[in-house]
Amino acid sequence: MLALRGAAGLGLRALTTGPAAGGALPSLAGALPSVLERLAGPSTPSHAAGAAEACAGSTRLAHSSRRQEVHSTTVLCVRKDGQVVLVADGQVTMGGTVVKPNVRKTRKIGEHVIGGFAGATADALTLFERLESKLEEHSWQLTRACIELGKMWRMDKYLRKLDAALVVADRHQSLQITGNGDVLEPHDGVIAIGSGSPYALAAARALIDLPDMDALAVAQKAMRIASDSCIYTNDVYTTLHIDGEGKVSDVDIKAAAGSGGSGGGGGSS
Image 1 (cartoon, helix red, strand yellow):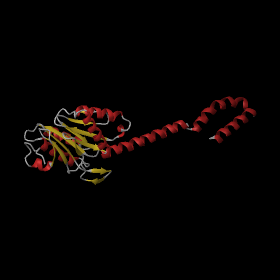
Image 2 (cartoon, helix red, strand yellow):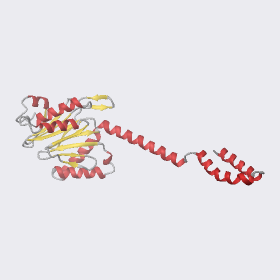
Image 3 (cartoon, helix red, strand yellow):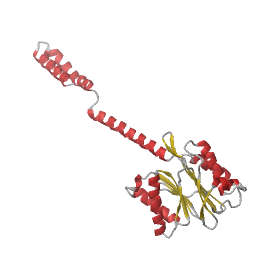
Image 4 (cartoon, rainbow, N blue to C red):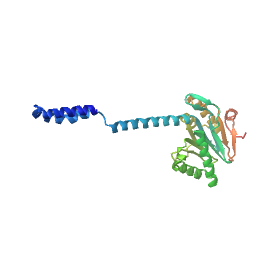
C-alpha cells in the first residue's frame, strides 16, 4: 500500500515538471484520491468492528449451546384436590452422551416445602440454600421468600450468573422462579420446566380435569409422554408428594399410579 502511494506520488511529480503538465495535471489530481481510496480497501476500524462482531456472535452461540445443554431435563409439578406432586426425570446429558440416568433433581426444603430444578446442579443447590435461608427469615412464607430470592438472583452480580430454573411448592402454592426475576404462580396448578416441559405441561393440562385421575396419576402419565417425546428425558423418576395435611413424603410414582390412580396415591412411603 505504501509502495503504491509512493509510485503515485512520483508520477504526479513527473507530470508537474514534464511538458504535458498543463493539460493532464488537473484531471489526474482530481482522480488520484478516489483511486488511492479504492486501492486501500476497507479501513482498519471496519475490519476491527467486523472481527469484534464475529467474535461476539461466536460467544453468544457457545453460551446459548451451553444453556441448552444444562437445561436438558423435565421437572413437573401438579396440584389437584389438595395434593401436590413434584416429579423429575433422572437423566444427565452432555452433548450427545447420557452420562448418568438416575440423578435426583428434587429435594425437600425444611419440613413443608419441596423443590425441583433444571440447570447446573451446583448453581441450583446454591439457590436452594439461599431460598431456605429466606424461608427461615420470613417465617416460611413461600411467596415472600421466593420474591426475595428472585430480587437477589436478579441483582446480585454473583448470583445472576447462576444458570438454573426452580420449581417450589408447599401445601398452598406452587411457584416457578427464574434468573430474570420472575416468580410465577400457575393458574391451573401445573408447572413444568426443562427441555421436555412443553410435552409434560400440555399432557398434564389435558388430564388435570379427568375425575378418575388424581395428582399422582396425572403426573405419571404426563411424565411418561415427556419421556417418550424428549430425548433428554428418561423414565427414572424421583417424586415428592405433599398430602392434604402438608406432610411431605417420597413416592414411587409408577407403583402409586399403577395401584389405583384415584384416591390418595399420596400415602407416605
